[in-house]
Image (cartoon, rainbow, N blue to C red; front, side, top):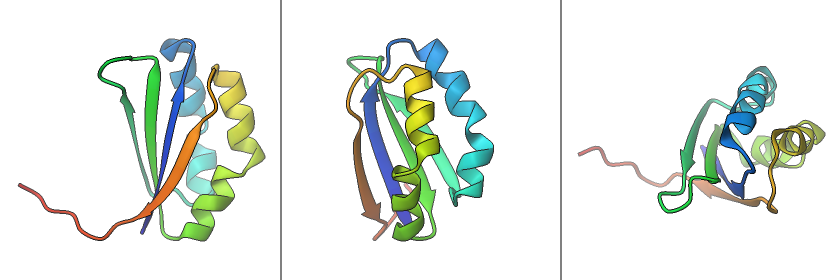
Length: 94
């Protein structure tokens, strides 16, 4: 399983979130199996998003998609997104 992590700054979370939500069907069609949204504890305008995929190929295709670029612009992303990918090795519940 591959997780795509994205960190970027938004001008207005209230504007960003509906655009993110509207992209839901596209995210699912492009292979996302789960997602999460956080904001930085020190700066709520910094958003951290995770998307899980069954493969690195699907994750990189989504990361490079025109749909994602268009949605980020429409949603008011005001910084260059930081994107990285991780392969889950272990998860331990406590």
